[in-house]
Length: 356
Image 1 (tube, one colour):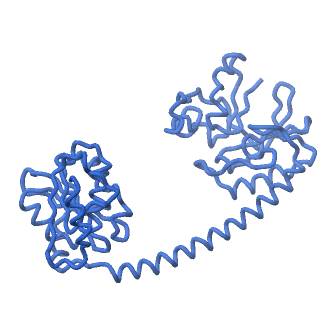
Image 2 (cartoon, rainbow, N blue to C red; image 1 turned 30 degrees about the vertical axis):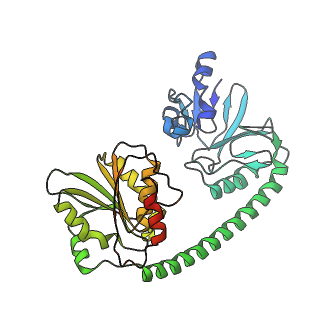
Image 3 (cartoon, one colour; image 1 turned 90 degrees about the horizontal axis):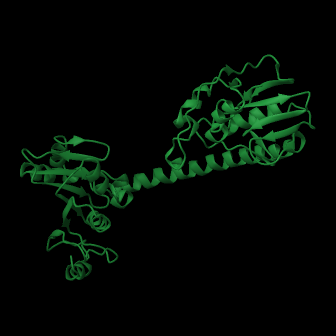
């Protein structure tokens, strides 16, 4: 007697040790490519967050790795092993010629094929495996998959031909679609760059004094920080344009984080201030922003129940009508310029009358 494993995803192995105990510990056979998965919850997927309701599957190692050159004779059964990767890197199919059947695991099913969107999966590899290793079997051979009903090899040929054609069409369509998107992004990027407010030479010099990460420019206070200011730039304004202001605030005792956003549009990273606050374990934080950046800062303040947020600093900005800060005890500093020709003054005055 022996236990033959087609692949080592948790749903195919989780009862292995129970079967071992029940039948006197027969030897286990598995592909060498997935042998370690028996005792690795990460690799057999039982340890993934989406399977938090499952216990981690950690099993004893297999006694044997499959050999692919010779027939096996075990307990009166003759069979050989064919490598059929694609659903997983070490998937195999077990062919029993005397019994005219094949065990395909999750490679081939009735009217479909196995999924290939899991780690080590590969759709092209799976299609090639099925064509080369399974469709070379006689048409009448029975197919017993790892899930659902049995079938035969013959009707699978028509289905896979359709799948292969569809796969090629999808691939061509996807490449064309991605090319069009890339062109549009390039054109949009050029237009946005031309319309983006560039940092002055003074601001560029000030920016060089900051610590730069992929998420922000950090200006550290000279001593113990009075508070942290996490700042969103205005729409189509480089974050470095505010570097002189940030440097001056740091000299006055404030830690300042100038956030970096895609295409210099704060709405494309609308929760970044909260993420930076949490990641850096900040306290006594003032969310700040210029123009559209201030609108996003207000949204963050309304969405957050963090005790770390102390207030808002708005430069030529105000909360949107949908942002409700009426239950908030946040301090608010609003700064405008009387000759501002961009600020929508009617909306600004309306926002001022609403509870902060």
